[in-house]
Length: 363
Image 1 (cartoon, helix red, strand yellow):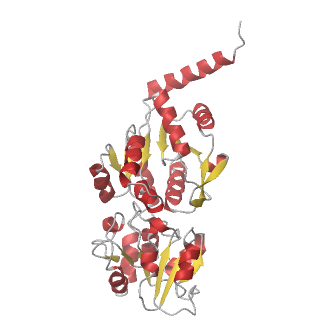
Image 2 (image 1 turned 135 degrees about the horizontal axis):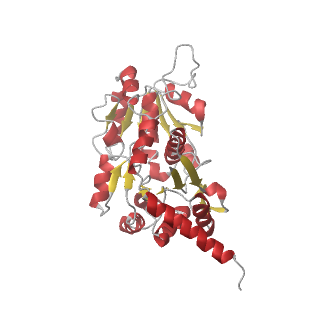
Image 3 (image 1 turned 180 degrees about the vertical axis):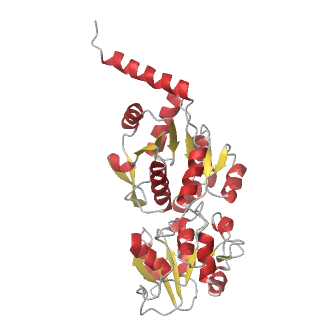
């Protein structure tokens, strides 16, 4: 099947959304599907205010329309709510094409953490954006229930996966990236930004060494405020995997993620995870034997981190092995809303005929 993905999050951005989309598209290609990705790297862009690392496309509507015409997709998925997502949504509505969407980021909470805007305004926009979608894909039951309470509909599950070959426990004889630092190592990996609640981790009174891997707009501020915390900067690929594998405990303080892919990456490395009771962790950790939840969303994180020191790393790894990107891609494919074959063929044939008529010189 020809599947078009419209997304405002794509490489070279480094985050859980991009990793999920790139992995799933690669799996779909391996399954024999033809994929066309419309992403910001194909457009002139401008930096997102307060977050210059994220680039937003300029003038996306006409180029996206041409991509629709040339690719003639049989299914369309709109992954994000930015300029490219808006352009694809508009085209689908104008041409009466079915499409699906997904909810990767708690956008209202993200905006409210950075700007003086109420949550209700963010949810009004998100409801408007996703309302025409045939299926809104979400990663966890907690996120599904939360969106239902906010008036969303047509919600379908779409879980996540992890590459257990790349993210794996440290083997005997492999170098320790934290050599020279006091043990235990408490690690966080992700964007160093206010919506990730990093300060709740950086400010904990923990033994050993606190290490934060990643970059973002809050890094310099937190590094100055917490001089005893090691800020290692952004790491990628195998080097990132080694940081996971050499840690003792992974701490995930975020309250705004819909899943938290780094949780699975830490677990695949055999590292237990401490987190607040928020969407994502609350769906992964309970009953897993692979981590500890704080009782709420404001305190208890230190105690959860310390309790993780007693968890067997082999048990953590075994739990993570139950997640795969192939299963994630198959669930995504099942959720798609393809155009019925006869209607689809007639639609694109008619569109090509109209385009030819427009190109003919006037009599």
